[in-house]
Length: 316
Image (cartoon, rainbow, N blue to C red; front, side, top):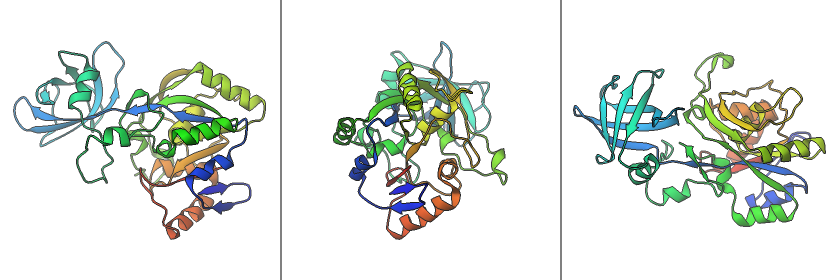
């Protein structure tokens, strides 16, 4: 589905038609994050099953992570965990605001290697089945190269190498950023006052070559197209007072809601999002709430699919 913000026009088509909506000189920015097998199953050393969900790695020399834990009783600091058939040990540390816990992991070989062996792919909760080997490929975008996400940047799932080749042939520049998608992206808005909602921080990187490409396009009046809401948040967080994209890395908790002034992004490719999600709020800020809801009503009538493996729209 394509949404023309100026003409307030909505059109339907096949995803492969998206190439026709790009112009020579456009810059398409994608998120190259890769989903890690973030679910770890095991038990507390004292007994009782436990599931540990990796959310974000903490900066430091140890393998310390912000995690969610699922067990009969919330593990206290000092609790020892045996995970992945004993290949991985964890210790609950002080720190972490509920429901999050800080956990330090120990293993005999490299943590990433062990995680690949014993971790489970964190499928969205509405997919009511255990993960399978096939999900390690299916729940990744063609761009996935930088490990660290606990959920896929799902707008990127639509793109294939032939479509990317067609875009390049048309003269579209395609460049990466990284935002390791965390649970904060998907936590629903539960406050009555939208401004009171707090996003959880997510780690991002803007390469210097990407900043140069985007800034050159902005100077020359060419469009910057963000592939996904995570890319949008990364770009709009990393802009200076003169509207220039800054290279670098850090943690962003940017919450984009109606009234936000977009400084970098001219067009957005994104999936259809659920009510009360920060993703739908961002899209409403970009295209206007009434226009977005009008498009969503048409999408429902025409049988478009929502959720992570659903359909998508281009808003320009």
